[in-house]
Image (cartoon, helix red, strand yellow):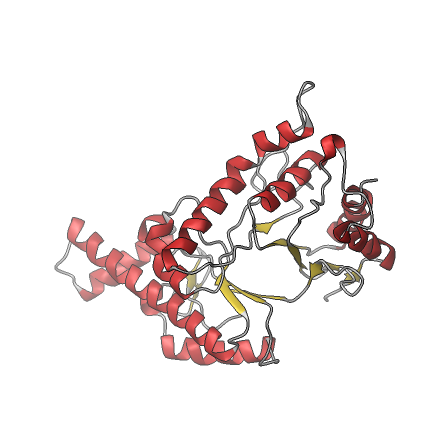
Length: 334
């Protein structure tokens, strides 16, 4: 059963005041959590026990974002050890059936034909580049290629399988976003998680040519505190640039390659990545919160998306506490 918790008007008003300059932004060394030139923040804290903000009184925090998970848009092929859906690999997907179902999904999720918010497609079970996709998709692709060309082996089979895979993945992703843009042309469409640090953005130029915006992911992997002799700014500049700067550089390369000024909306989280040693899943500390918001603003992101999925009432309670005790006071300079 889904339960949505609306954070109180008091908190929303505090956030609104911080964003409009009605209250101080400044913390140590003049660096508050909420930069004075902070771009729009899109609130995407979802899940069965989502915590939402009262955006009517918090003008800089926006909710006009629609996120399509892979089970929510069309017939996305995927494989796990336990299941295979819609052919499992892009080569075996039924594109016509996928697009027909995707059309229904888009119209249902975004009924307003004039919707002009963000629309993000989250297809992440496989990567469209062979060298970066998961082993299970490579194994299935080799088996598929061998059935079609049993006379191949070794390097020839690998080349054939990889070419089939990449061509099919590319067609699947391109046709999906083209359909989405034709149905809701005023929306800002793009794929979640691209560009990625481990993939050359130039190899993915075909995808960025189709997108209205790019949505890289820049979640924090570590917790940190300033050294005794560091200022807040020194601590911020030393830590977060290692991640967010590289993401923004890759996104800028993607934008330049299209010949257009593509907006960049990095996805950030108020918790550390689940796989981070020791701290995985914990809420980001004050210094890392300052770092990721200030550095993202300094690098001229067009906006940021604060994302998480809340699937237990305990996590919802923890989020509520974090917003009240950490985020709202820090944003208002208290």
